[in-house]
Length: 637
Picture (cartoon, rainbow, N blue to C red):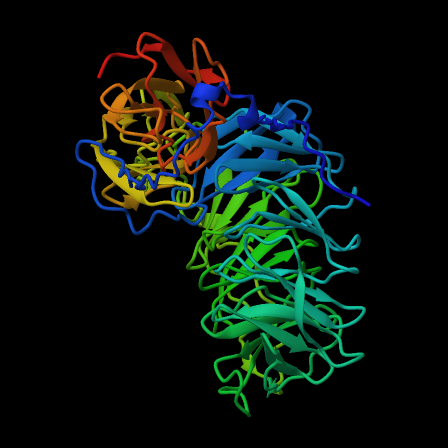
């Protein structure tokens, strides 16, 4: 059985507490067993307080922005800021395997190769751990909330990266996976037609639906709902908790070899027919009704070899491997761009980011084409790029191309050949009497949101955390402020803002020992940039136990006030909401009382009174989980 093997492991320690027997007590104190006192404890909710802190930010959970690309030639991975068309971070990964792909999660990136998966910190930009993949095949990577996920289709395995990583068997070979915005991964087993899901945060796959026996097809997502495209009946069916919903005819013949886009664009699903070299844009707005709301649009494609279609927010993206070009279309089937992929040895790859942009990686990782939400394309040189330098949205070579006119299904398409070369500027006639005209300056690159703040770190400082970061790339407009957000695992969140020249902040009032997720994002006049995220535990203060005299009491017949009183025990810095056994001792009778179990509050603290005592002049103390208190001299009452 294949599984992930983390190379860094931690192990907890078990402690065993031994209780004393009452029959071993001295006769004078044998009856002085502790009363059962109902000591009220309160859970204190501590809100992180920082000067200028605001109410919890509603946008705490960020979609992962940008895209990481591997460049084996420099043993490095680079972060491409999709909105700014620039490189804004670099991490060294020694021994980078050729053909590696990079996916990102909340706080880490993962370099996925054939023989190993290397985790690096997105803020520290350093290698943190190495994992062993379940097989040597190249997986399909899916970036979504709760992931990222690696789907090993042939092996029928899903690897969830994160904390902790997990390898989850799917029961058989898999088709192309899709994901909905809530972080659910949807899977199709072609051999049986079973349609399965892996919910966010779970380690077990459930299969609520199944396609009819013998029917071929694929999954897609329409309006954030999983949908099965049945190529046998040429229908769309929503996938629900109780099986497939009502099938909607799509009005065009779809062969079993068709490739389906992972999501819709403005209500239309792109379906590529590679043999006939055409693409259908199927109207899915009438899902669940019969017939479909509109006729499908069919686009005739140029001769080529096409990878499966994918989508940005409002464009369909095709990669023609034969011509090494990227083609983009809108939801009406109108061609937007034809963009050559910069030449590199090997085949380029397409990936869809969580920011709903499409990234086309060169085979050697030297260039990345960024397909924006509107179908515009920018070429970002990776190796040797100056961090923060934006690239114009479109170059002359990727302007609009006049492609075949889209036609409704069943209408013959035009056979006119498209001129795919960009128009050339004519040479001016020679004229020795005139000075050649000066080429006009290129239009200025508009400002875009800032880059990701580099080198984000959080370190203990007193009872708080000092958070520091580097300057984010301005991308054409000065950084005006940084927004810092921190959230306790399983608890509330808080945020603060600092000016654009600030590089640190100290978080105080944190819950001792609790884990926090810290996010820093830069803002300028163009908007909010790529967030940097780190995790850190709030400092844990030293564990202390203090004993003093509490209130007077009379306990049975042999312990009378005013000399008889309770011990007052104060515990600080222990684990929150945890039971501890408290054992009292004294000079003459070290084991005079078997003690009692008490529970700390939400901050790991506890104050209570117990264990009546009246031996004036003796010293008393308590021991809690190996921590001994002060030796208190018992006074006269």
